[in-house]
View 1: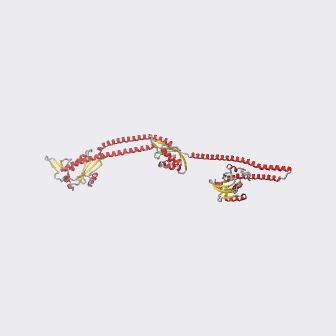
View 2: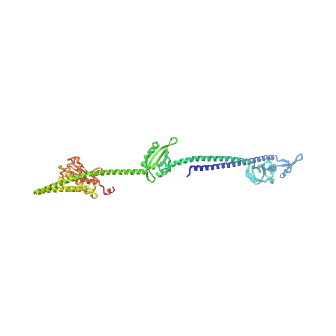
View 3: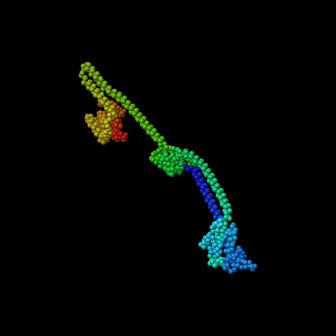
Length: 626
């Protein structure tokens, strides 16, 4: 792992190397510069020597040479034998010989050669009169350069094991030179040769060494100072970095190693920090949020985005409140987030954005939803249980009434049978047979009534247990069939029947629905009363989501207090009427079994009645799906 401390150390090492390289380059430049300075000094000295030699040679040339006493060291110059006044004598008889400028210069140079520490010189030419003046290889190259236009040639050369700065400039033929060299074909202005000056460099080595020593010392001091400063800075930065890394480690331990999705959002909505845990929670890495701060708006579920934006605005206004919202991961999974945040401030007290914490509460939401569903289910079960209890209570009450009614109504024919049977026995004992036939008829009528009651009770008990498969019923056809069965009673009572022709089709047990319609029509015929023009209408009307079938009559009517009583067992408004009083109860039981309701509407006695019922039985396929 690359840390700040290792980075500082690498940077310090690199800086030390660069500093060392810089000092080395500086010293190399200094050394080269000082070396060049020494050479320039030697070159300047050589130029000064050349100028000096040129001046006295020019002086001698200007005066046509000089006469000196003849001696072994200065014999007459054989190269000047063609000059008539080469040798002269003084009035005292002293022998003098002519010394030309070149000869004079050569003698001076030879004198200097005998002094090792002096500057050496040499006069030479590519066509020397005197063979000893022939050029050495370096001088020959310099003379050739003069022929090509060079005005000066200088170079460091080794001579007799010593380093010399050699400098050479050309000789230009002057008028005085022609005295000795006219025979060689020179003219004024021609380059006739040159004079070289050789300055020993070692005479300057002491000063050079002293300067270099000082340069080494100064550069060494600078190097040590730089290295010391780099080292000190490195140690200071290392200590600061170590403290900072410890602080960052504590921060990372708190912020990075958490299951919650933490982030710090600046006032401009950009993300200053996003914990790595966001990848596991929302599916996007923290780099994605750093690159695009609007990504969070695309992560949030569209249905919850408006609420989040309102919350975000309130948070930056200093009024943050917790909020729960959904996010959509890249794989499409939806997760619930519990979001809390607070405004953060700089050390100066200025607002510095918002720090937020997001926790995954999907499991909790699912558990809450499960609990809610279970609560609703339990509430539904409790409600159903209460309904069943109420239904059971109603059935128990109905059973009590049924038991009481059965026991009461069945006792009546039994009492009749028992009474007339006793009367028959007494008549037999008394020998009176004239009443036998009437009593027996009454006994048989009572038995028939009991049979009818028992048949109706058996029929009522079968409703809901014996069911024919549901079929599609054409109510128009069914109504015509029932009316055909009741044609006799209708004609006998003179009842007019009006049948609506657009009755719909329904699903159900056709035999049972036929019984409902038949009971309602028989009831309407039975209670037509003294109406001179009895009329029955069979039709339909629209109800709340279903069709309401109606059987309306203009007969006796039903008072308000009896609207429910008439649907009880054996309850009849007119005790003298025919039947057992179980027909309406049977009809309601059949309708309820088909998912519908049966009720009566009447404005009171003599106002006629309208019996209404609905049928909501579904087709077999729909029932299976339900």
